[in-house]
Amino acid sequence: MLGLIDGILTALALAAARLTNAGEGLTIGLGLRIASVALVSGALAFFVARYAELRGELRNAERQLNLAARGRFVTGKLGTAILRESLASAAVSSAAAFCGALVPLLPAGLFPHERWLALAVGTTTLAALGAGLGYALNGNPWRWALALAAAAVIVTIIGAFLKVVA
Image (cartoon, rainbow, N blue to C red; front, side, top):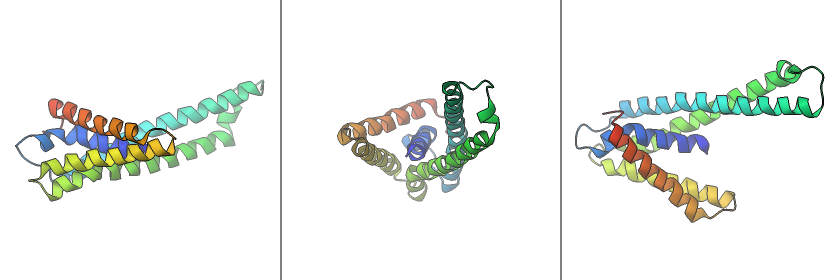
C-alpha cells in the first residue's frame, strides 16, 4: 500500500506542471520516466527504512538477552536474513511505486488533451486507498479518504509551483 501511495504522490508532484499548465502535455515516454524515478527513489527509501528497523530489532534482542558480545546477531545468519528480507520488501514496494505512478500518468499520456483526467484518477485512487486503509485499521474510512485526497491536491499544487518537469 505504501508503494502505491508513494508512487501516485511522486507522479503528481513531478508531473504537476505538465498536468496543470496549457503548454506541452505529458507523453507516455515521459510518464514511464517519471514512474521509473518513483521506482528508484521508493526502493532506496524503503530499503534503508526497513533494514534500519530490522537491525534495530536485532540490537534490542541482543541487549535484552544480555549477550556479552555485541553485533553477533547482525553479523551472523540473522543479519543475512534481515538483509534479504529488506531487499525483497524494497523490491515489492518499488514495483508498487512504479505501478502507482502509472495510475495518473497513463491517462495523461493516452488522453493528452484531458489533463484533468490524470488529476482526477490520481486523487480518486488515493481516496479509495485511504478508505481501504481506514477500514483495515478500524479507523474512519471517510477521514482517511479525505486525508489522502487532500495530500494529492497539496502535492499537485506544490509540484505545479515548483515546475520540476516543465
